[in-house]
Image 1 (cartoon, one colour):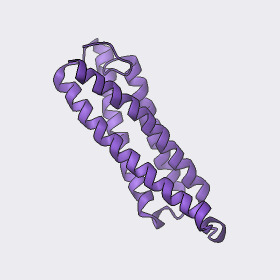
Image 2 (spheres, rainbow, N blue to C red):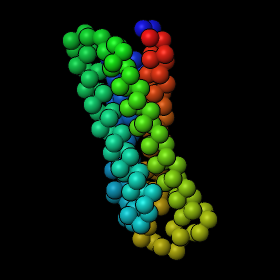
Image 3 (cartoon, rainbow, N blue to C red):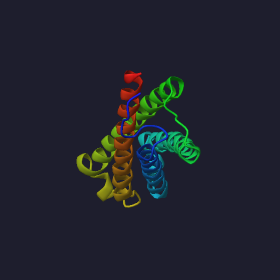
Length: 154
């Protein structure tokens, strides 16, 4: 297999996974601290999706750490196939959650002006959480493409 940025068991892969995990965790924390987040199913879906991404990224980061410490190669066909499927499923769910939440935020802030009327809604925190989820998805998209390239080169 060829050497690709973000490969499993490499420092670049570990950095991507840690970034995904941290940004998704930050998105969850910000959304959960916002008052009124449970008023929208999209926000609850965002928390669930980011929670899945945190778990997936954390497990893969632990595998990367293990591989780096023992100098093992994780780039065999079985692992790469598992990583490809997991990354693409997680990326699809994360993008769907981020987009639906962004739509609700636009509806709240721009279209209906609910944020100006309802002071109990934390619209600024909603926006920050959605932005963090898109950043987390972007790192996951990079990992997904790297895994796909590794699987295709095998």
